[in-house]
Image (tube, rainbow, N blue to C red; front, side, top):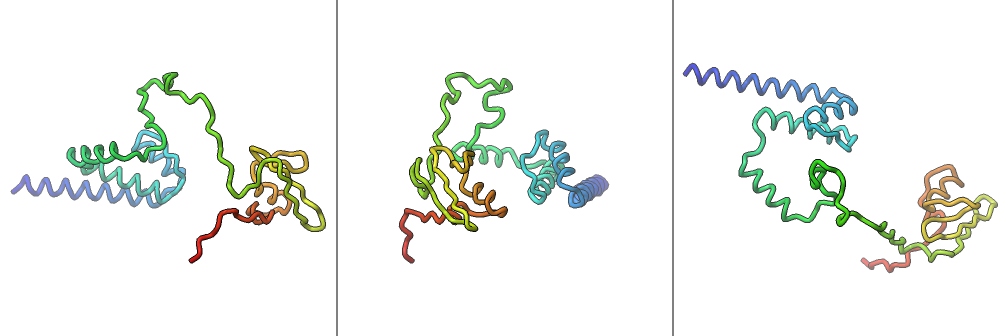
Length: 183
């Protein structure tokens, strides 16, 4: 009976400690949460989203305190992860500790960026009148030329001209060439 009470007290102390740590997380700033993330995960988070960081750290604190997933659950999760072709990037440890990528696996050419279907062919001249001024833009294979400067998007040109954010396609009145589905 005495060992049962001792075990229950330890569990209550553990739960109180976890609750206290989670309450402290709620008061932290994003930069403090990022530091705590490094502390509990041993790696830096790419996220600056406060709620995401809070939830991940709180989960990790609870998992460390209570033991996390069972070995059976971990194996099943790994089976599911191995079956899913969802990963966009290789894990950091995919090539081991040595970060040099073997030459036969290295990318040799840059992937071509497909052009937006709404854009006219490279070489096309776009014209628009804005506040008594004729705007002339030439479509390039990888950007746009306006007043002898190269821009990555029509929106950047529209923003420079108006001083406000604009959708470049709307500003230059470029209509979609794809037929809309009738509802």
